[in-house]
Image (tube, rainbow, N blue to C red; front, side, top):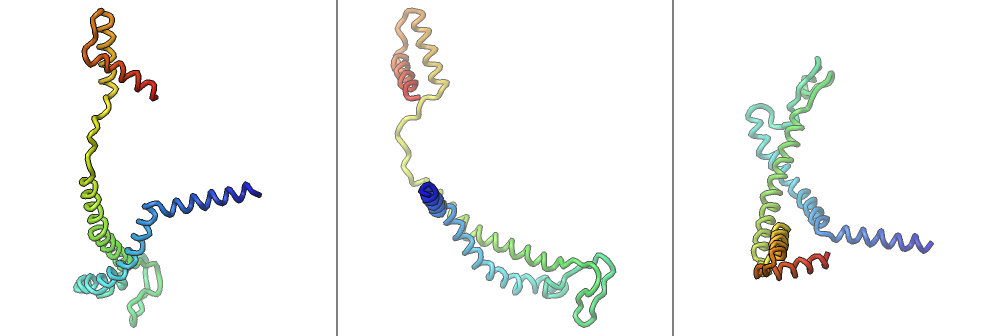
Length: 173
């Protein structure tokens, strides 16, 4: 029984850590803001885009439809009552709403946030520590030290320190 209690604490602790990570919080904010923008974008589509499209036909995109087979049209409402028909106007309206929402979220939220993060990263101090020697540089120093040892001459000035560097790196691994 005590194992289950410990396991539940582990699961709850893991879930809490998952929720507190930045990605989850950013995602929640994006969903809330996206939902708020959806109503604005829907109004723009219905109030601006639909009348522009309406210059070519009906103001309501939902009225745009096509019939695949012989369809019966109700003369009073203009709607199909029989047959197979596609309501492509409502799909177009939903696609326009999505594209406008995505553009607003990207240009008003994501792009400024990325620029702000880039500025913050540029303000971070640059590390003054020299870069660690690469594997190629270390192998070159080893080769030079071995050649110098075989020839009986003293190694190049950097070779002794290179050997010390190599030994210290080997012990760290």
